[in-house]
Image 1 (cartoon, rainbow, N blue to C red):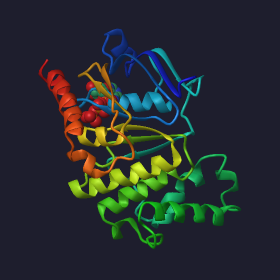
Image 2: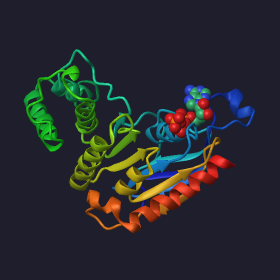
Image 3: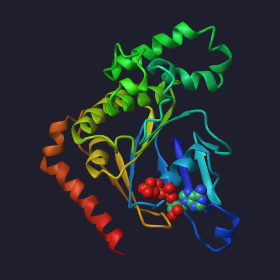
Length: 264
Ligand SMILES: Nc1ncnc2c1ncn2[C@@H]1O[C@H](COP(=O)(O)OP(=O)(O)OP(=O)(O)O)[C@@H](O)[C@H]1O
């Protein structure tokens, strides 16, 4: 089966001068991700996790090696991706629903028919809001929502154009522990229902193990993939799973690997 995302010996230097000096942000990354797989990437700060995301979505081109998505070489920004970041980045002058509809106003093929199909899109946005527990908040402005609610709305915005791939860069990093765990479950449920590919960059090993099928550990700069760990915990996973010995054993195993990376 063709992998959904395929990296073969990928290196990236941000400038020609850095390439000449052999200073790569990521180096010799080879991995393949299957359709619908939930992948988490963990590693020390500055190891190249965000660079990996930029390569996957075509925001940056590899200096060496090849990046393919759905069997096709990536040559520019991909439309099939939705993204959410640590800061929710909602536009303060737009209501929740208008923030969620934003990608449809910008990205083709939705853009040209946006006005004509507005009711249809509104209905889809409301349905998504209901899925993340935000029914009734359509007309609120971002400043009327808590941080966790804003992040829920950001997830809806990332998913409104039904992307095949969802890229999340530390999406829950700024939230308190309880809200973060609630949002793990929101993301788990969205993924279980829609089975898009997820690439989740996180510093939180428990988050990675709770959500992902596969966890990749990256090394310090230049970022390389040090290990690949399949998480064989059965699904559906409930928060109680995070208190089991098996869960903690995997977290500890990853923690030990990261400890080695940091100390070398
Ligand atoms: N636009 C850029 N120009 C030059 N170097 C860059 C650029 N963006 C990132 N880098 C360098 O590339 C390396 C990897 O950065 P990247 O942002 O991918 O790391 P990260 O693992 O996502 O970091 P963090 O965990 O702190 O968010 C770092 O050393 C960084 O300084």
